[in-house]
Image (cartoon, rainbow, N blue to C red; front, side, top):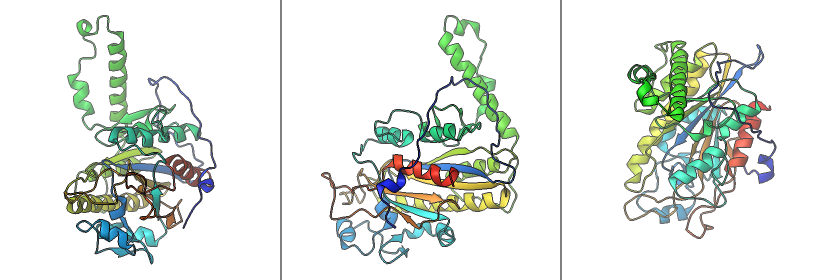
Length: 367
C-alpha cells in the first residue's frame, strides 16, 4: 500500500525545556475506561539489512546483486514480497492485523556514519540536533511518566524533554553502595561534580523505587533465549504494574554485517521476532488496561550489492516494523526500486523518519 508524503504530515510536535533534576512519579493520564497506550521502541544497532528482512523475491536484480547472500527460503507476504523465514514467530501478529511493515524508510540525504545516523534517528531531525523524538511526543501529550531505557547504552530518543529519562543499568544498588556522594575532599570547589553526583544518586534511587514496585512474571510467560530477553523481562514487569510507563526504549546490537551476513543477521532476526511476539502476547495476558505498541527501527539499511566478504556495507533506506492494534495497514510506503539507486548504489527512500514519527503519534494518541 503506497502512501504519499502528505499523508504522513499532520501534527506539530511540541517542544519544551526544564531542568533535568526534577522529581516525577508514574501517573496514568488516561481516563478510567480507556486503555493506557504504551510505546516500546526497539533500536536495531549497526544498520539492519532491510533487503534480507523483507525480500523482493520476484525481482531478479535482488538475486543477481547478491549471489551469495540472497534469501531463497522465504515466507511469502504477497505476490511480490516475502519475510525472512527466521522471523516466522511474528506471522500470527501479521494475520491478526497487528503488524505493519514499513518500506523504504530513510533520510533524503543519508549519513552512513553510525553515530551521526543514530543522532538523526533519535532526534527525528536531519541535523541530528534537538530533543529526542520520544521526548517530543511525551511533552506533547503531557505525560508525567519517566521515559525509561532498558538497553545497555540507552538512546537520545528519550532525552531532552520535560518528562525525565532513566537508564536501567541493572546495578543501581551496587552503584549507590560504592559511590561516596559526600566525600568533601573530592567535592571541594567542584560544584559541577557535586550536581552530577546529586542527579546520579537521585536517578539510581528512583530506579530502585520503580523496580521495587514490580514482581516476578507468572510462569505462563515464557521468555526467549538470548540477551534481548532480559530487556523484554523488565519491560513486561513494568507493564504488569498499576502505573506502567508510557515510553520504554530497548536495543539489540549486532546488525553491522560487513562479513558473513547470512548467519549473523538470521540469528539476530530470530531473536528479535521471538521477543516482539513475547512482548505483545505477554502484555495482553498481564494487563487488560494497557494497549502496547512496538516500533522497530535501525539507523540505516545496507547496500544492494553484496561486498567481497559475503556481507553488505552501509546503505540508506531500510524497513521498520509497527506492532499493535493502532496499526491496521499491512504495508506502509512502497518498496524502493532496485533499478533506480542513488549515486552510491543505495536504495532511495520514500518515507522520511520525521513524517514516520508524526504518523506513529497520530495513530496511537490522536485516534
